[in-house]
Image (cartoon, rainbow, N blue to C red; front, side, top):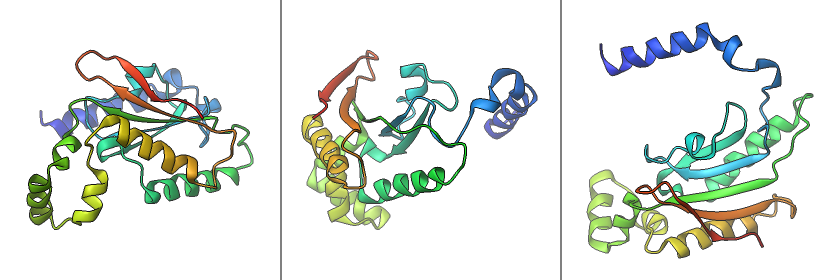
Length: 179
């Protein structure tokens, strides 16, 4: 059985037991626990398992390197604006976590030569890729958290923090605390 066949089989089993396993009535477009997480696309980083989340608990945005961009913030605001127009939405987002992780591939593109090689290979923008590079987790998390905090569309009541997840131990360390 191919990987796709296995996925489709699992999806079919999930759908068959959906009403028994998921409280459909409580699900909405707004996260039940008022949490937004921005983390890496790396499959070793799974916030659902890390934080014991259930379907509907949080919005999880996954980006390469877990890096925050103005485009990502625009997308999150668009989703929030759409959700705010739903009559059943009563929850608000209270916490936004930016989560980077050890052994991230985006530490490699901090090397100028490797970054130039990758940009040439994929036709990427060297300036944009330099902005995504992670030379220091403390710096990348501070930059990303500052980008969120500087966005005037977010209320002052939103708690924004930066975290480093250790893929070898499963440990989580707060690198940038709430302001």
